[in-house]
Image (cartoon, rainbow, N blue to C red; front, side, top):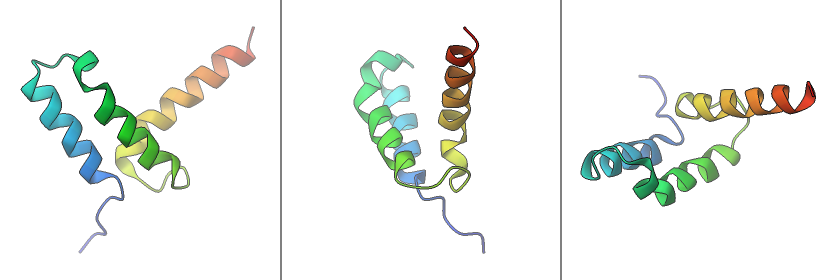
Length: 67
């Protein structure tokens, strides 16, 4: 049986919040921040649900370094 994703709970909370708020991200910033905190606790590549944030950070780093 595959190991449960370390930040799965927070990812599910985001989905619940988005559904409850007509997919308005602005109303779910607190739960999104909780997922970011969870992702920051673990090494990159360790959590599948964090991969989107990791890619976002890589893109920001790449863009700011290419100026």
